[in-house]
Image 1 (tube, rainbow, N blue to C red):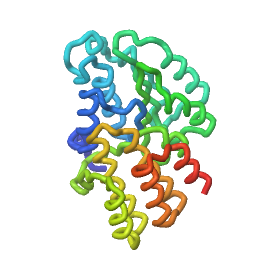
Image 2: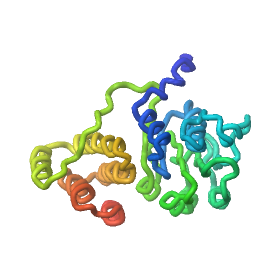
Image 3: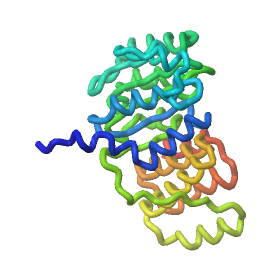
Image 4: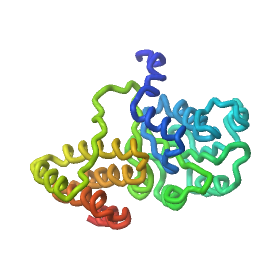
Length: 263
């Protein structure tokens, strides 16, 4: 087996991590996040994310009281449920939610981490729906997974980011979605012969643009709509309709995702 240790820090150069790190520093990162990554970097990602998220300035190294509270065992305000390869059970999830409801000890808020989130049982996942949709006022929720296979009801409530072990340069650059009715009409006409994968790829570029504007919730809605459209094998026109409804008509997630799940 090749030695991958020289590559283990390469993920910190990925545009996804750089954008997320910047958003944490600026105070614009989402409260509910799911991160898909190789198992080898999950702990490193968890601690790097936590150091910034629990820091008063968002940098992770400003010497504040929270930063000074880190020990070899972690941080009093980082609540972790499950382990790598071992998702938490429903009892663990209930205990996790109780601990997340407590006031932070040293940090400006608490960070709750669900490990192996792609392997959660249905009862355990369902018990986390409310806290994923409405984290505590001074809290963040982070789901860590190896595969993009979160239960759709959780996935539709969080912003998804993918972190590669050795990031390449193939990711689409951010692209602004259509704004006016005329722009939408032009896009709908130009993409009517596209495949669903091509529609989803362009929607991914829109999501990147929305993230750059700190519109994380809308970006998550766009990505989740395409995820569910592909999972349900929707036609191109149905995928187009979902994007139009979200971005032009301002349709809420409840209607969009309800329609997609029931199809």
